[in-house]
Figure 1 (cartoon, rainbow, N blue to C red):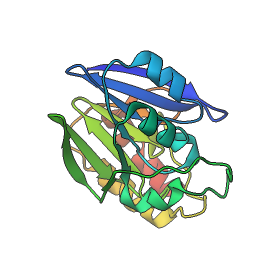
Figure 2 (figure 1 turned 90 degrees about the horizontal axis):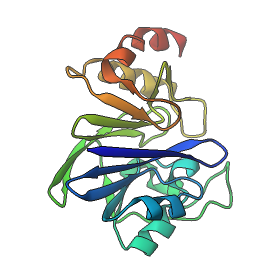
Figure 3 (figure 1 turned 135 degrees about the vertical axis):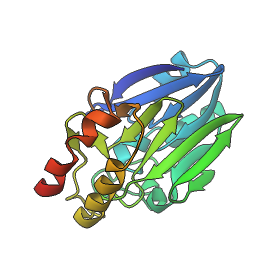
Amino acid sequence: MKIQVQPMGPYQTNCYIATIGGKDFIIDPGVDATQWVIKHTTNPVAILNTHGHFDHVWSNQELKETLNIPLYTPKKDVFLLQSSEMMPDLPASYPDFEIEGDAEIEIEGIKIKFRHYPGHCPGCSTIEIEDAMFSGDFIFKQSIGRCDFPFSSPQDMKKSLQKFKTIAYDKKVYPGHGEPTSIKVEQANVEYWLNAI
């Protein structure tokens, strides 16, 4: 699998293109991501959202319509795609598929696992494709997503971190901001964050 990344917009939100078997999956197309995605894909098949915050979904609808491909979004964050208190001029987007909880789906023969880790926001999820985990704003390198935003929940974040700690395998983690890390490396930091929340 080939992974391309470009930080987008004022929050430098990572937009990823994961290419497997000649098929391009666009993950979290943020502010002004459209032209970069078009330039760096040859066979786009789907847009995948880790969660619904504006800096991760800004270009959803434009890409969906331009490329004529479906949009997959965690169900509990769909309401965030149409309005944002932090960014009132967010272009509204409308998913074709709403992913509920933990789910394993298949898109054009490629298996994709959504794992639900609420706390940062209600639908916050990771997306696993082969040996990569795209963690959105749940887990970063030596950090975690904030849980003091509207619709955040510190209690849910603690439960999600406990759940993350039980993962028995390792994969490279590609977060929504900053540099890659790995599941095992960040599992070692979970106790610190549980005590810090």
